[in-house]
Image 1 (tube, protein in one colour):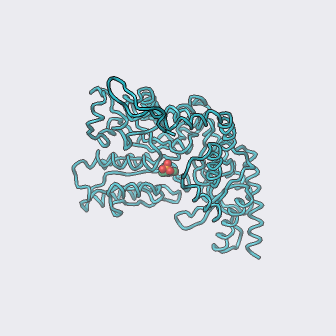
Image 2 (cartoon, protein in one colour):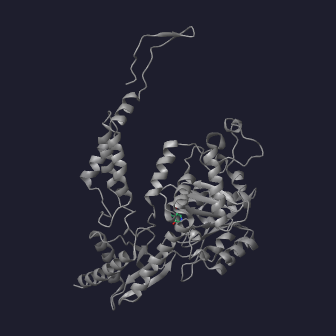
Image 3 (tube, protein in one colour):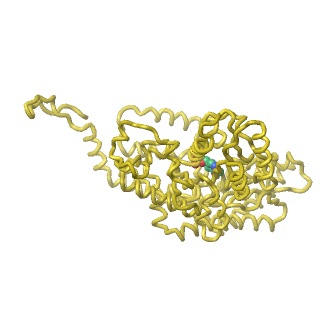
Length: 499
Ligand SMILES: *Cc1c(COP(=O)(O)O)cnc(C)c1O
């Protein structure tokens, strides 16, 4: 590989060292020889990304498996192509199969296999979507996509944004933008931001990374429906101002991870307007409902936000690593993320052109995440994408209706944006026994590969079961079977627990 293949030679009067073969020459040959096998691998991957109900939901590595993986982890000398593919299969196989139709925990990816076909294209082109000079086509597409998505949120003309790796980064960028827009030169050590007690953990983390102390993050109590109490927010802002603090940002949730709860955005927006605060909405999971055909009205108050975090790898059918930060005024991103660069500033930018993406976010080198989402939506059509979102809401409501009709089940929080929490409440049992029963139900369902329905501990300490039914492969028959399984398992487990 890469060895010298001839003597030194003269060209243009200069004596060059011996010619070298490309170090990749052998590899190209190997890939050529195995191309039919590689294509077969792609064929096989369809069933990986689209598992049937018989696929194993959770496959965890034991100590022996882990020690084998650690050995494989050290690259070492060259290996044959097909054996490396084989090893990759082995390593990746130890995971919770989050795209199994009956994986109903966390936020299951609603990914379709179209998404990785798109990603294969994006990776093969490997366009550098930092700026127009490196990828004018994909940059134009990203501008159009972000403007279109912002228009779907009913943001005004002039809105837009940027694709990022996910909600955590989008939330962090939004806090930085709010700080720069509202605090400006003011003393940031006295600044305060407000979140609900149900806010996603990524928000406090991002605030801390940006230099805010924990005591600058004021958590507002939620009501019995897990939504921020606007009155409490208002009182807290007033109190903080009277004490010389500088409120600058309120963050509402549109689809809390635990319960799907939606904060009262209209009231939050009014308070933000009165008190001159930035309103950011964490819609990582829930904002997709804006594309729903039957439920888009639920999202109408999103239009009041200054910025919104929205994940396409949750409820917009993309594989991981695809999220957006959308802002009411797209020009403000550059005031937080532009920096001078001798290299980039000379890369052919025309002064009056819109800023480059490398000026709108943290990343310089970035893949075309917008292309992946565009591909999916272009292929599906917006109407069908909307139906796929409706489908998830409908199925979650089916679970709720069925459980309400069965004895022993309490609905803790009704279906909200495809999230439902509930528990089996066998009469006369102590809280401790009920916890054992519900944890037991979750464990038995997973052990028997019937479904992944995890428990969640809600704010008042109550332990509930939770489902999020957004996988478009799920059918109403699956839901009927799930509910039957839940009920039989609950009866069996509560019988065993009392023995
Ligand atoms: C998932 C989620 C996040 C974090 O997004 P990532 O894409 O995982 O970084 C933030 N907020 C909410 C409400 C979420 O559901």
